[in-house]
Length: 213
Image 1 (cartoon, one colour):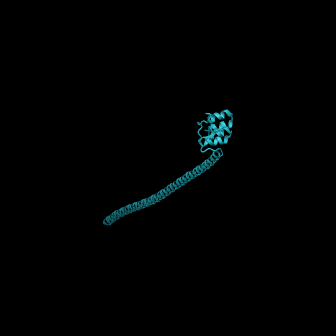
Image 2 (cartoon, rainbow, N blue to C red):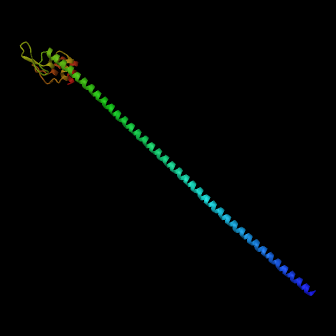
Image 3 (cartoon, rainbow, N blue to C red):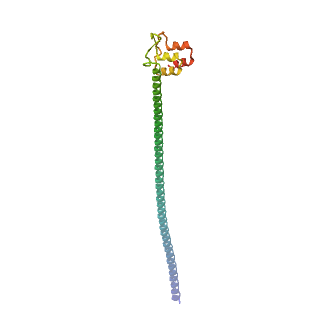
């Protein structure tokens, strides 16, 4: 009986030890499983973080590339606008230069036309004056504008075309002769200048005509 009790005690002790050991093994396994799960979670977290970083980097690269493309397009657009504005400015300046040259040329032609008209008018007036002078000299028997002519009953005195015009009170003829450069210092046979004769006649028109010289 004693041996049987001893044997039962030993068996019970072994069973207790075995149960404790099995419990310990279970705890170890549980701890190992938890550690494995923790490590797996960390690995998954690291993998997810790495993937997130890669995705973020890729997104940033795409955004940077898009921004660079937009900046390049904006720069190209600005350059095109600047070039277009420059071309338009050059075109405006060229047009203004053409207009200015055209205006200058038009003014030159108009000035030349006016000058030609003045020259033609002056030439016509000079021709008319020469014709009138020739007529006056011929009608009064003068060989030239400042040539003397004998006068008086015995042809002992002299006179000139300007004196004849003054004596006749012909202000138009006086003005013509003065314009044709008649010599107003010439004296007739009585020692009188044309101005002396005009003063004696007190003819305002004749005196005014003489004054034009």
